[in-house]
Length: 115
Length: 118
Image (cartoon, rainbow over all chains, first blue to last red):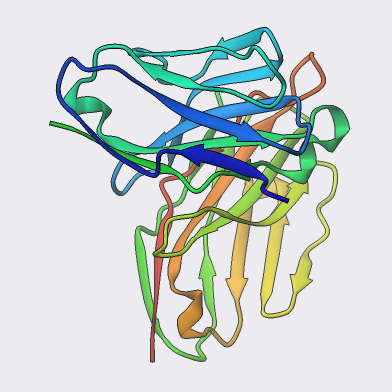
């Protein structure tokens, strides 16, 4: 039972480069999320999705894009990397409806450095 | 808008002492969920507990206990007889329900770094 899997675990990007952070879950969760965690801070929501084909902005969406073509996958794309996007990125998924109270399941995180 | 405040940035105690981590939240919703997560030095996020807004019963799980008080909008976490392995950053988080029947993500506090000294 893999849970939520993120790739890559580490990445160094140059300013202006683009990349996609991959996230997949095998729990058949409808809800998926992307968070970023800056040093000494809590996680902040970038984007979320309540199901395939539906995405919504979170608290800090600027500079990112997402898509949700399948229930399992929720990739996060950085089009023009900037130093301010240096952070640890977490993908998460959760049940929907009344089962949302079971909490979110998090991936291991991707440490991204933009230089 | 919702907000979670963890006023304690860092706490250091000696092993076997009891320690309480504070969490105060703000929300306009009457239905919401509160969570605690642990982030050990390895970096992953470990789910500890969730509590819904209609259930104010305190909960105990081994050395961990949680005190939820709606009157003060607090959801505090106590570790009894702390151990070195409890050293981690602990996050309190809030989730509000939406019309679609689910949550639109968690609002996290900034975390409390707990250091347990041997």
